Length: 119
Image 1 (cartoon, one colour):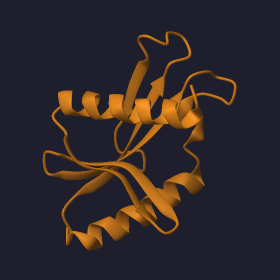
Image 2: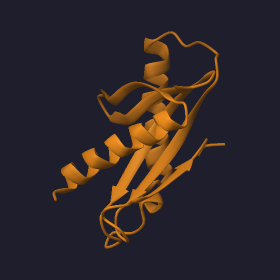
Image 3: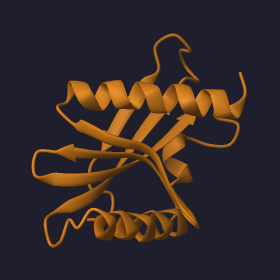
């Protein structure tokens, strides 16, 4: 399976997982010049920007290892554009991370949600 196909499968699983937890999915793959957010959702009163990292092997490390300082900085910049676009104002928002790991069991991936990775 190509890396794009693995990533798309991971994002689809992440959306289903988040919906089971009560998140309302607003957008997938929100893009601006210089940035992208995999999933934009609402979790109760919070606007949530979710980065999804999917791995089919650990050849290039664990999914969580892809969340670098620079990646978070770019995500926050993109989130600020979205917040302005929808006129969210001073209401709460956060950045969450979902790890989808197919390496151990391709039929039953390990899914981990880390809430508020910046705080």
